[in-house]
Length: 204
Image 1 (tube, rainbow, N blue to C red):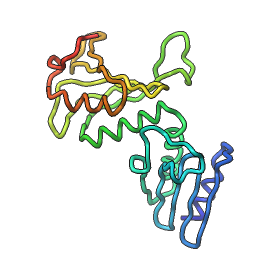
Image 2: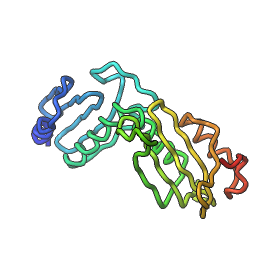
Image 3: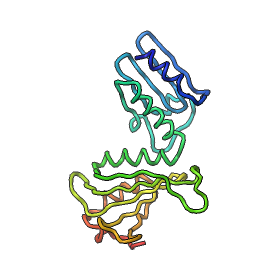
Image 4: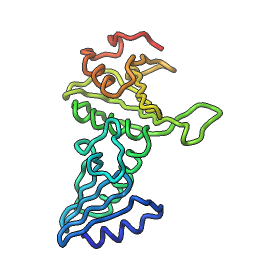
């Protein structure tokens, strides 16, 4: 697996000055920008850790704890490496990754999730777009709630969340007053209501 992983590293088309590896008889450590890949002949671990990174970049929200994943096949490890490269280089994806991590942490489950980029006319260039996710059919700690939400991740670490009912009419919603991921999560947890109508916010 170690030799195959090295070949996979050099097959990446974009040149990166921080693409390096260090190998022993039974392990290899690969660095690609902010992402670290450690492998034996049985398993590959991929993660971000500011303490180990070759680039001095302590990113908000993300750590080794909430990025590390282990794989038994190289294609899956490389796919996650590419994803994590985006997470560590684009603030929108940094917030998106951490928000999903926190949802799992608080046991907020969903049956429907959509992902897309959204923006406003006339500037639809990718660098000016935000990430938009629609999340519905929610349960918290296995308890069903009768509201859904839209969450938008901007380039300034802002997380804009709006609640909406299970069967919304056009443009119906209530905006969460918090815009920092952890505070948004805390707001959801502290709602203590099951229905959209009982959420103590003014409709937008």
